[in-house]
Length: 279
Image (cartoon, rainbow, N blue to C red; front, side, top):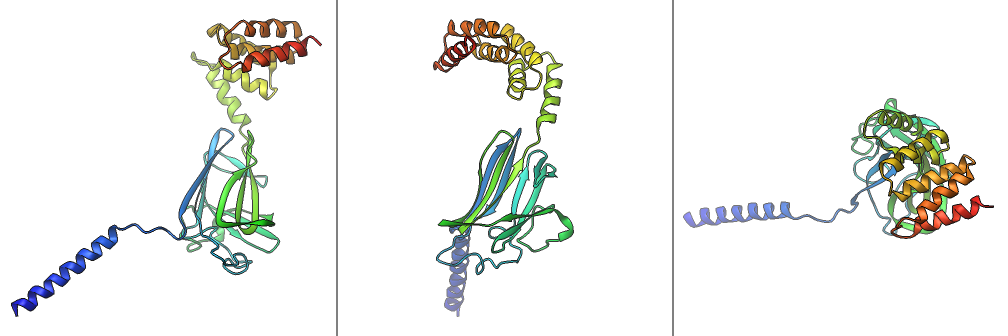
């Protein structure tokens, strides 16, 4: 009797130990989690999603039915987060996180941003919580994408394209960062303090052709604060050239040539500006 009790207890202990060991083993996910992040304007956009693979299957129309809402990946709903207000399809998207749903069709998809960010797939979804819906064209590709992929393409200062690709289908939409008003306000606020980013402020005004006289004023301040900063001198020369002060631009660019340029890039820029100004 005691032997039976002992053997039964031993089996129970071994079974419990096996269960614990199994719980500690991490198996590879069939649809692994991923996150992509991209700076757009003056903040970031990130996408968190799970990546299923085609595995020889016909994806759209079979694995993912046409004209039915899709979580846009596997497992939990895909989440997209905006670090600041941006625009999609011409409409404002406030900073924050959203669920990204899609309704795939044969020739076009419906893209949906829903204000409830942490949904388990489409479970709990309510259309009343949609921030926006808009349609995009479905593009058929010659090369197949085995694993569902969300990526950022066509990166510019103020925008980027979100591209969704799987099997032989790709769709995309643009995110636009309307940051000029906010950044201009931040610059003006920073310039009212003692530690002023003169070079950066002058550079932004120069690149965006805002107020070149103000940009020149700040470039002069940047040079005063750091007379050996050949990059600030080159910025000043460029501003002078755009203000039609070719003589001043040449004189400033010649100062750049007298300084030690680490990689020679600014030396070339200065020589090119001098040659252009002398024409």
